Length: 203
Image (cartoon, rainbow, N blue to C red):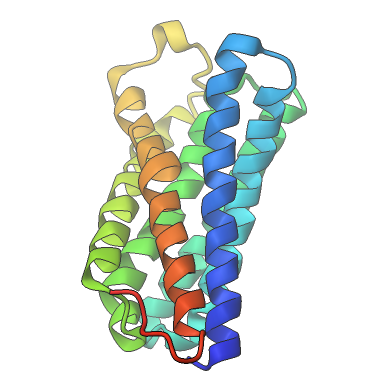
């Protein structure tokens, strides 16, 4: 990866991580202060999806084989689904829970890409082992969102009566808001440091 490309990829990854952190903070704030923070969180979630798809396509040249192409497609479709989930709740079409189910499924697609990328592409790019491991763990946790797929056609939208497997699927948000941003920020630092002349890449 040339210096300019590494720097651009690093900045994109860092931006993704910071948006995810900000979105998580807005969600936490919305439970105490209300106001516009819930809507900001929804916009943030959609932005995470778009930035994730952009990063997936930026790294596409390093993704080997048909399976790699499918992983990038999973991230792209997943990003579109996360945007749809945010749009549902912002527009008032559904409640928070059902929109969250849709977004969870979208982020699960991004999680599939994240696992594949860190198991395959990262070896080509020389990413640190810890970064690769963090990405695999984060992607696997995000992929738990696939558990909630049946809840969408069932139109589950009441937290009080939601079945246990919905909460299992929502564990995926720990990946979205904790592990994934940590991975993205680390990748951002690694990419930008790799592009600096005279400095060794972060280990």
